[in-house]
Length: 164
Image (cartoon, rainbow, N blue to C red; front, side, top):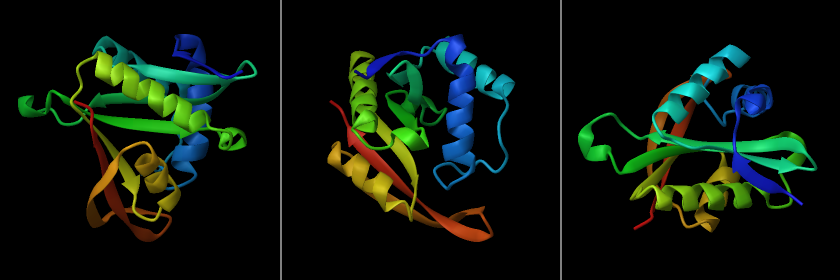
């Protein structure tokens, strides 16, 4: 049975592997180069030091995905809005792990008095946009050709969900 829990330092190698596969090898992230375990450790320590969550989903004892959020923008008026990320390893993308993990992240956000969540999704990633819409997010804006990866221009779609 899958379990969701806060990530620990021991999960960072698995988180790094998942990010590099899903985030660097696709347009799920606009990161161009693989990140190191040290890079992900610094990311993890920064988020958790600021009080933001990093959750993992384990399936049969293996970290199969992770989700996190951080401050949407640095200006004070955005203090109740977060930007989230969710990544599931390729061998685990069916069976509802992403839905379970995102619902858990939303629950944590509600518990932390977050008002709105924002996801930044590649405009051609209809699967991710539909995933978010099934969970109550709305595709609220599209920014044309703001990223470039794999020798092509990429649109970004903001998916948003007001929690309170």
